[in-house]
Amino acid sequence: MSTQRNPWLALYALVVGFFMILLDMTIVAVANPAIMEDLNADITKVIWVTSAYLLAYAVPLLVTGRLGDRFGPKNIYLIGLAVFTLASLWCAKSTSVDMLIAARAVQGLGAALMTPQTMAVITRTFPPDKRGAAMGLWGGVAGLATLVGPILGGVLVDWQGWQWIFYVNVPIGIIAFALAVWLVPALDTREHKFDWVGVALSAVGLFLLVFGIQEGNAHDWDGWIWAMIAAGIVVMGLFIVNQSRNTGEPLVPLSLFKDRNFALSNLAIAAMGAAVTATFVPFYFYLQQVRDMSPTKSALVLAPMAILTGVFAPIIGKISDKVTPWVIPTVGFAAFSASVFGFAILMEPDSSILVYLIIGGVAGIANACIWAPLASLATHNLPVQLAGAGAGIYNTTRQVGSVLGSAGVSALLAARISAQHLPSGPIGEGGAGMGKMPAAVADKMSTALSQSMYLPAAILLIGVVASAFFVGRPAPAGGKPDALVKADVAG
Image (cartoon, rainbow, N blue to C red; front, side):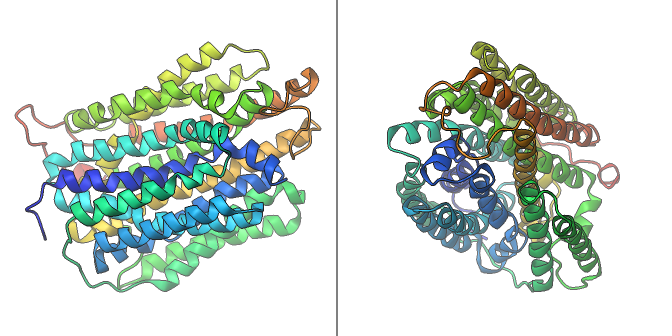
């Protein structure tokens, strides 16, 4: 393994691409109304633009971590970056919502190839006593990207149109590719067997669940929709059985979950992924359609969240190894949940924007308390030979949470809009840049959107509970962090 280079240089190079692919998880949220109008799509179709990306991102993550172990993290990262960048160009050139959904799926595949390699490089190049700071940067980038996405998206949509949220990836992708070629070391590779049965079961199970949940309201929750959801649950159950009986190299080494903090970190990050995705969709529809804000102005409402996450995440990452593990993330999840509940309560046609800015600032500090500490806890005790698998599992659970959150909020939002007797497509008299929405319509729409916000607020409570059960001791004041007590970690 090459250890001569400064590992920070490699990490800086990798996070450029990592920032870009996470940006694309949320950058579309602020552009949804514009895409819906330009491509004449209804709300369910336009949310598929995000869900297709998240689904194609989540499913392959279990195997792409192994691909990095087998063929080298640097090589797989570069291949994924090339796929992602070319797919971004395809997205920008799309002339129909179906074409855009297909391009986003390919984009998600490229992201899946890239993501586990970033965590694997950290685990394999940084010593345990330096991983907290490294994961602080990684987690800060992850949190900041999901929050900056809507702001950058708003500026680009107002400036040149929704297509530019994808065009901008092309030059960034080229720069990220050059930096990775230059700075990322070629690490040792290991032979791996690939569990293709497990890949097929996880892919089919996730697709059935997501499609059934997201399309349920559009098909009046017919019997075949419920059958599809039930089949998805059964197939995912078969996947777990398959993994438990696999004596070779399962996609998910269930032995990793004997580490209590790894297991709880996965549950917590799944809740975080679901909540972030499910928060942005209704909130930006509210700001643009009910409050008649431009994409840029609506994105700036959450600017304090993004700024404070970026400021505090590296600081909290550095101290996370020195504090009892459960404290910081538990406080973070509780504060973030309270913030989203606050958004939901205040979402009325004439509520104060200043209050949203204040609540967004609290949510930003809360986010900083979540991303980096969770990543550090999840990887702290991973053996080197399972670095790729562990990184793949952790990122998969975050992405599975994101895609289920997207599907869930889509179904709930469609149901609440229908309950208010509003159309699911573009509302001709309202929306961003289309004039003030009539008062009666605005009142009904804000009610539907605010009710949808209770879903992510409730999901975050899962993170509160999971984080409260983290175990271990803080590092001694002298320097090197005290290893987590194995007996405690095993539960």
